[in-house]
Length: 540
Image (cartoon, rainbow, N blue to C red; front, top):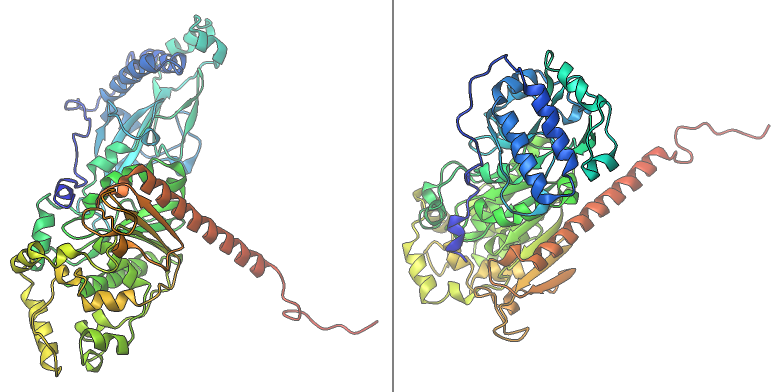
């Protein structure tokens, strides 16, 4: 699984685009009647899957052939083509690299919807957004186009039966040849239906294509290995990367990957989460991207700093949910734990005497965050993994080359300490060993927020002696967890159906709890407090 994750980057997987598009042109003769006929076919075939797929493909090709001109008609954004909700409109002038999706690949059903319009993938450049993917955001949009003089609706019973259309349903299409059409570029998650001459029909949607097009970190598949063996060559700073532009009314789900991974490893889970409209409505996805070869306490410190930066940039005033896989679970646990100077002395004697600004001290002595509401651990080695301590782990340790800046800073810190046992700088693999002092100190803490645990067991042993192939069940278990689910899968099985269902349950549980708490606060703020802002009155 670890090696397989190298191939799972969020890269453009043949974004289902058409041939090169023709140049914009004003001549739309014949488009209106053809468009009316194609929308009518969509309506007639709504309950006939194979016929609907053919009708949808013809409808999309019709619009894709005229895409530049139709996008020009949709600029600036305005309520048109039956779309009334201004919040659902997108401005083509703000977007670039608008690529049509003319066919839909198989996948999670919640990511696509057959209907009126041409789904497209639109890139939103974000040069001043420090949390944007390097290439900008890839958004889902649908170009909805209808004849600008729509005829009276046709009854659904006649459409379902495939009966001939009444005369009035086609005459207006002929009139529309002179004026043609109305076009609007919309967010299909906001505009779900539009009125047409054939009744209300769904707006077409394809959310899988923008997920496939997103390179959330802008890295090559081999970068995961490079980030492990040569963390000093990591480009830029470890940071939080957003999948979509920040939305203040949605709860951030912060996904923290593990050893020998990049955020691309989350693609199978991301597609399943976004296929659920409940998750799309309430949550936004953030990723922590960092080099995985460096010491675990340092990566935990970098996660704290990256979260601080993201919160400061967005002005986030609500809580986050952390979701950590494998070593990422260790980093997440450190965010909701406290290691005091006394406990840190057991990790590195003399560390409490270092300057408050020293990076070694800050990595080993820390307080829990107050802006995290819940943590979910996925296949996390809370008490380490024997693989990190065996001969394979020792071989990997010898291959890792830590950056000179880190080595120099650490060496300077060690020079200030007395009685230390070793001057060797620990790597991430050292930090995942059952003998890790940091891991032992962290495991002795109790998380300050509700935590949930998903454990893997391939079935090659009983409940206590089993393993996911990397992490023993005994190491993955956490007594402080509010819930624990053992899933029959290997170490990379966080996209297992049972694991996904449990993760959704926990997310929605937390969002509901936040909503209930906010409602209580609102009622308290609206209710006058006796004796405040009032004048005492005596008896008449």
